[in-house]
Image (cartoon, rainbow, N blue to C red; front, side):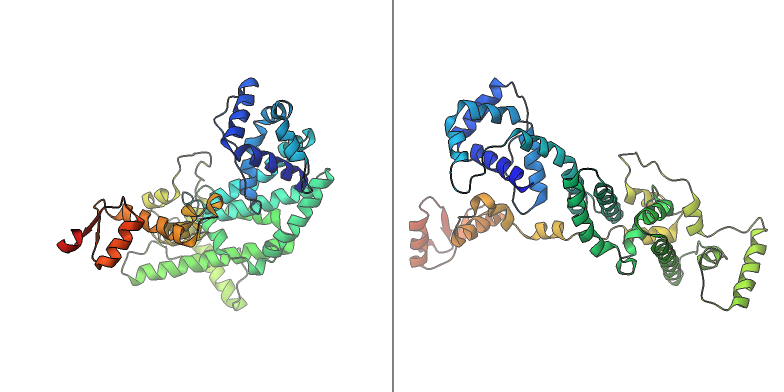
Length: 393
C-alpha cells in the first residue's frame, strides 16, 4: 500500500513542482482529450484525508501521466533514478488506487461531517462512528487478504475505544433519540448490530434510564421556573416500569403497576410527552432540506420539555477544530508550501492582515524620529502619518 501511494505522490509532486512541467502535463491532457475541472492535489503524508483527495484527482489523469512517461524522458529518468526512488506509477498502482478509494471515502466523509462547521448538531457523531465500525467489521471478513488484514488491525483500534459500553458517553445516543428521523428505533438497531446480547441489553437499559432521568430533570426545571407542565399525571418514570428493571420494593412495584393498568383503562388518561414523541411517526430521512434545530423550534409548543433538552443536547460540538480556526490565522499563512518563511516574515504577514481588516485608513504612528526613519528605510513605499507635524516633515 505504501509503495503504490508513494509512487503516485512522487508523480504528482513532480508535475506540480514547476510551471514548465505543469505546462507539459496540460499538453498531455489535451492530447488525451481529458477535460476535467479538477486539479492535481498534493497530499500530506501523515493524514488520510488529503491522500484520498490526491488519489481521487490523480486517477482522472492516469492517461496523461502515461503519455508524459512516453513523451518526456526527463520525467522517467528523474523518478527512476536515486537510491530512494521506487519507480513510476504502474498499472497495478492505478488499479489499487481505484480499489482503495471507496475504503478511504468512508473516513473522508465522516471527517468532513464531524469537523465541518455546517454539521454542528450532536446527532451526526454517533451515525458516523458506528457506520465506520460496521464497515470495518464487514471488511474484516473480506475474501481479499490485504483488505481483511488491514480491517482486522483497524478493528482492534476501534474496539479499544468503543467496545466497552461502560466507557461510552450516553449523550451520543440521546442526541440521536432527539432526531425525529431516527428516535429510539435507530439507536436500538445500531446497538444490536454493534454488540453482543449482554452488552446490547446493558447499553439499551442505560440509554433508556438516562433519557428518562434527563426528561424528569428538565421537567422539574420547567416547573420550577413557573411554566405550565406538559407532562401528565403519569410520569415518564412510571411509564417505564413495564420495560425497565427498577430497584424498588416489590410490593410498591406491584401497587404502582396496578395503578398504571387502571389508569390505562380510563379514556381521559394521556401518555407522557416523551412517550408520545417516541411513538409518533418518523420524519422523512431522505429530505435533504430537513433542518433539525428548526424542527424543534417549530415543535417547541407541542414538546416543551423535549425542546429544552434538544436545545442543549443537539448543539454540543463534536470537535474543537472549528472554534480553533476562528481564533487562529497562522495556518492560513504558514501552510506546507511556505514552511521556509522566517519567524519575522510570518509575524509581519499576520500583523499586516490584521491591520488591513481593521481599517482602510493609512497607518498612524506616534514614535520618535529615529524609529520613523528606520521604518521608512525598511519600507520605502509605506505611507506613514504621524501625530506630530515635525515628524511628518
